[in-house]
Image (cartoon, rainbow, N blue to C red):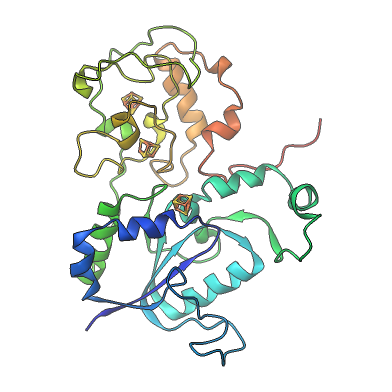
Length: 300
Ligand code: SF4
Ligand code: SF4
Ligand code: SF4
């Protein structure tokens, strides 16, 4: 019998859903074993039923719910709670769902400040907001986490295959650096950090293992504090393959880790001063503003 699946998005950009599509040919095999009973990405019937007869939020029962996006509104919170009631397994898909993602940078400001500054001149009403952006596990118990912004299609494929076998799935707790082939000398080439728009030193004709580590070249690379998983079957993490530093989109290596503290020590360990890094709080928590990692600062 096919696995019944509910898929829902909240404070999200649809990149996670595109990653499901990017599973590619393997998705064709998977589709014969999955029955999507709810997926707003295709058609959204949770408010009015299939034919417009419904008057309240309706989520069908399912074996698995896959949810992308964090939770910003009262309505999203209610829908998530209903999904948790109706679905046996809850999968958090993508960094917005797991850690708040980029939308949770809004947690650096009070709700009222944002509403007044951005939405006060809108002609229609804004749906009721919660006090901040929440990760979904702050509202409902999550069973499986598939991190990434967006997640790697291979990881989604593996997780769905595990679910089909009645198993759980998780990425190993290791860092992007653990999967990076660049050459390391355990010291920085200069003592100060460089700006993103300066060029790395590398030869495009030569393989990545001849290129010096991005961080040791003085650029910001969050590989030491970011969970590995974006490499898939390729030879290097996605951004390193494109010859830029890791921005931290897979989130912390383990739950409860404090990337800000750990990154300071990674910089010091190779003799790099974080002093010149602009807006360190936002930069090092860019994808993980939920769980109270980012909060409004008191006015000076
Ligand atoms: S995790 Fe990234 S790709 Fe997924 S919804 Fe959030 S912003 Fe979009
Ligand atoms: S800091 Fe960046 S470039 Fe250096 S090993 Fe880690 S991921 Fe690779
Ligand atoms: S290298 Fe870092 S920012 Fe780039 S895709 Fe991988 S985890 Fe995300």
